[in-house]
Image (tube, rainbow, N blue to C red):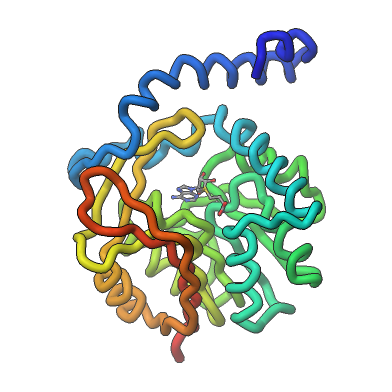
Amino acid sequence: MAVDNLNKSTGSDFLSRLRNYLAHHLRKGRRDTEKNRLISFSQVNEALTQGWKDSTMSYRQREIVDCQLRKMYSGDVMNSFKVAAEAVASCGFLDGLLVEIGCASGYYCEVLPYLLRKKINYIGLDYSLSMVELAGKIYNQASFIVGDANVLPFADKSIDILLSGNVLVHARDYETVISESARVSKGAVIFHLTPVMKMAKTAYLTMYAYGVKVVRLSFNQDEFLCLLDKYGLLVENIIELEPYSIKGIEDAIIPKTFVCRVKG
Ligand SMILES: C[S@@+](CC[C@H](N)C(=O)[O-])C[C@H]1O[C@@H](n2cnc3c(N)ncnc32)[C@H](O)[C@@H]1O
């Protein structure tokens, strides 16, 4: 954001933009030198797991999402939106309840009905109060809850489609998140954009998300599939995106969206 633009803003909007502007520029140096650094499990501290709660992130992310939504309406739909819609469509249960875990500012409650040409009964959950408040302001027709993917505030088998919205990748205790996702769904669980590797062991890294340092993981695929099986999830469909590499990891990382049926 140029300083000129800051001058055009007023009141609390001005303060919020100024805070974001400063946060972004003060953190930029650190972000550039410390991108995707491999760490050990014991180095994954509270600050890294709770980083997404930083109140500057919601507005920064939303600026980017607004661009992506404008592109979608002009016919240029980004792959992650297309894949999420394809995964949800493949589940069936489209008239049931869909809950997105890690919903951020709630844009999938706009993207999914648009791409599927169907009204979706949607609830979004995120552990960031700031994300949930922003989602509630933008989408007053949907419901949003503050909650943690590690202890979901839903009864057993109370959801038709649980969309784990690119959140497992930031979950230090990913086995707990998988088991909670399986517990609350009676139909399907989608682990959207899960980065997996064929050979390398599950790895913990740091990354900067909208200027804030958080933990991110890359999973050993066999270990991940074993966990799905352990918690009664049968993989029915896998949608792959382009592989990428990260310095220090000797294996291709493939983002995959796993569509699972809840057994029994
Ligand atoms: C990468 S963003 C994904 C946003 C959106 N679902 C998407 O796919 O584009 C991850 C989101 O998960 C949230 N998140 C991270 N850890 C969480 C946790 N333990 N419980 C709930 N939400 C969490 C973050 O606040 C953030 O909004």
